[in-house]
Image (cartoon, rainbow, N blue to C red):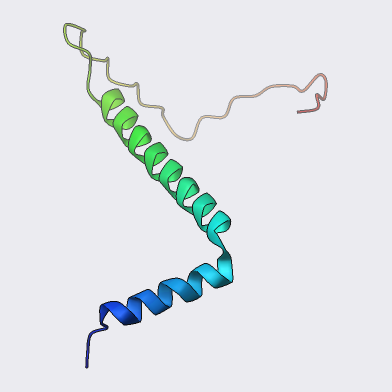
Length: 81
């Protein structure tokens, strides 16, 4: 009684098809697949950027910026951005 049988899942699927229609479900599936593919590509690119290329020298450490220094300047012209 705790689990649903195949007939329960079939009825639920039919109701979902009647409510949303096959075209919306197909679009939803393709959008979800594209999002998953984009996520995987992004993760692959992020891990590739973390690893230095073979034979390339190690990246120089980034210089530390001392906090508390103010750089003075003058705005000469306003630009729209």
